[in-house]
Image (cartoon, rainbow, N blue to C red; front, top):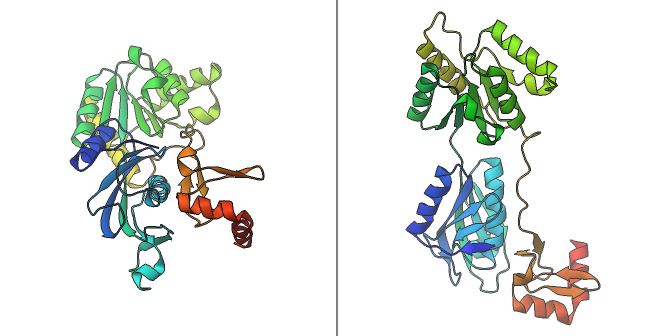
Length: 319
């Protein structure tokens, strides 16, 4: 699960590389420790959306819990402050806003971990080679957006991801082919730079070719705020203004109904002895009992279960 043990500033270097590739992840940082926990204040780890870990924030007790919470933080797009331990360790006084997650670690340590999702910037894909397309690309880059300018002949659905914003600015040079490729990729937004009449002709042609109405209805045409009579380069300002407006309103989120499924997360299980979340693999001391495989956070928990499985399974059933 944890393929790369990197420490300190190396974690931040890895985070920069992931961000530059447009990959979303969470950065987990230990901000407080009660010994003898193996996590140290300032220790950091990156957790990807698929549950891969780069770095170190704690041992077998803490890591599965942090992975679970980090993946949820990426989905929720909200940071969280975790308090890992037992309520008794904190004297019953837990500040508001913290998420307390009881763990029954044999070391009796505790950790406070800040989990922050690191989300990608807007990915703007502009199809075309006109002065307007070049101007829009430059303006997008000024805003810090990840911007790709692709010639119509080179554009395909493979250039687009579900979070991308696609603006087809081919302006008569392969409009139909570019829009067909764009809708096939199901990005968060598709806009066509064209007059209303030209846009209707393009969409009508694609409908005749069998492209579904549901996909074609997602194409905005004309794209851009109505700024009146404008030059070709000024059209780029109108398009950018509309995208900024839509983003501020939260209208550029990916279409979850057509977004490709995320890679499967690592399997997890609950230790029947201490109720810890553990990895459901060979690293968690698997033990088969009456046809069911159980996993454990430590040798001590597995040994206790082996001696009297019924005691722990009856407790699990009551819960």
